[in-house]
Length: 160
Image (cartoon, rainbow, N blue to C red; front, top):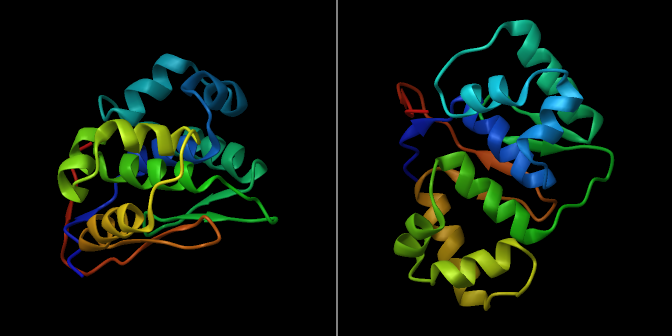
């Protein structure tokens, strides 16, 4: 496994939102901040105060999602997430578009979109191709819905 980057907290937040199926406005309301501030944070245009990050983390924890210090995303309280959302969140965590995942897995972007939206179930070969693409980047997807990061020392942070 070759983990190339450390996941920025901003991208981890966007991935957790994706996992839950929340829009930015939904998280912003729960964390009591403006959607614009959240958007700027998630896209890396600005940083946020620790108190704001704690409010975001608290909103996720209230929904059963835990942001790991390693960049991973854990679940608590028996929260179940759709498999397609888990894969979409892993893609967002890496900053990949559906086209990026398509190129890495040789599965069409349309098929990826349908899977992420819960409108289709891909063949096992496609799931294996997705898993392999994530694994190369140091990401494993647990059956429970969690996203596990295998971090190696001395890595550079990914651009936001």
